[in-house]
Each structure stands twice: as structure tokens, then as C-alpha cells.
Amino acid sequence: MSENSKLKGKKVAESAIHDHTYRIFANDLNSNDTVFGGLIMTILDRLAAVIAERHSEKPCVTASVDGFHFLAPAGKGENLICKGAVNKAWGSSMEIGLKVIAENSITQEKKHIVSAYFTFVALDAKRKPCQVPPVLPTTPDEKRRFKEAEIRRNHRFEGLKQIKQSRKES
Ligand SMILES: CC(C)(COP(=O)(O)OP(=O)(O)OC[C@H]1O[C@@H](n2cnc3c(N)ncnc32)[C@H](O)[C@@H]1OP(=O)(O)O)[C@@H](O)C(=O)NCCC(=O)NCCS
Image 1 (tube, protein in one colour):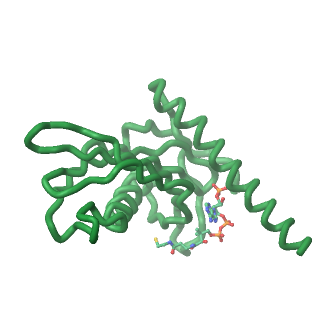
Image 2 (cartoon, rainbow, N blue to C red; image 1 turned 60 degrees about the horizontal axis):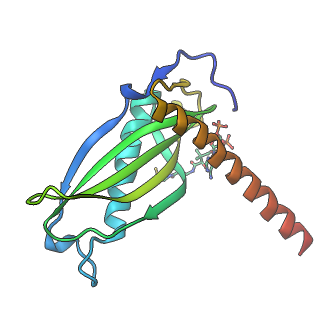
């Protein structure tokens, strides 16, 4: 399923999440006293599911994660501020981009700690992939993310093709 032009487009703002806030407590830390990465992955997977389902108006499943970058650690006394939005939709799949900012409640200091890109697939009543509305990017950032999502998808397809070829040859 590669085209989604039959459905009316939806704006990014219709499904975006701007500031889901999670307070870090001691039981969220790993043995280095920084936030356990798996906790952040879980939070983002849940938020991405909400965004995908708001955009598609269908039940959605996580198909893959193309990039999950831990850029800096977060620790006790900080809040995780999570933002996410749909970057692009194809046939039945959508890329959801997410960003996490760690904020010190007292000093208000903020740092960008995670960026991640999830692909979700919308399912019909028979749990088969079904068409989703196209994304209508409006702001310069949304237009940049829309373009970059296509690059990531093409890299994934190209990588899979190369792996297939390499397995054939070995
Ligand atoms: C994701 C899933 C629905 C795809 O089903 P499928 O029968 O392989 O579907 P198709 O080959 O027809 O592909 C359907 C879409 O999924 C996309 N897709 C399939 N595998 C993918 C992957 N690994 N990464 C990204 N996208 C993928 C395809 O590109 C296609 O997108 P498009 O319609 O926008 O072009 C299926 O593999 C699945 O159910 N996986 C398990 C999902 C899950 O349990 N997630 C965790 C819990 S939510």
C-alpha cells in the first residue's frame, strides 16, 4: 500500500503532543543514577501510539524504530518534557517524531536528551494494514520533518535490499 491520496489530509497540529511531563523519581534511575533508557522508550512508544491513532483514527501498532538517540542523560530532580508529532504518512504507515527535554524544576535549565522516530501502521477491523490520511505540513519545521521522514524510509528500504543481497551472496 503506497498511496494515501484518497483520504483527506490532516494537519500535524491535529494529532501533536506538546508537553507530556514526567517527574523523575529515584526508582526511575539505573545503576549510574541516570534515567533508565527503557523507561523513556516506553513513554515515547505510548505517546507515538496516541499520535498515530489520532492521525489515522484507527488502531495502530509499532512497526519499527528508525532512530533512537540518547543525546544526554537525565537524573533525579528533573522532569522529562516529551513532544511528538506525525512527520509523514504513506499508505498505511506513518512516521512519528519524538523529542525529550530534561528540565530542572528549580533552575528551569533545559537540555535536549532524546530524539526518536517510530513507524506505526494503522489496522482495519480485520487487523490488516489500511490507508491513513496524508499529512499536511504547514510550518517550516513540519515541512523539513516531512522531507527528512522520506529520507529515513528510503534508507530503511535500501538497507533491507542490501542485507537481502548480501545474504544471497553468502
Ligand atoms: C507492522 C505490520 C502490521 C505490517 O504488516 P504486513 O503484513 O507486513 O504489511 P505490509 O507488508 O502490507 O506493509 C504494510 C505497511 O507496513 C510497513 N511496514 C511493514 N514492516 C515494516 C517495518 N519493519 N518497518 C516499518 N514499516 C513497515 C510497510 O512499509 C507498509 O507501509 P505503507 O503501506 O505505508 O507502504 C505487521 O508486521 C505486524 O503486525 N507487526 C507486529 C506489530 C506489533 O505487534 N507491534 C508491537 C506491539 S504494538
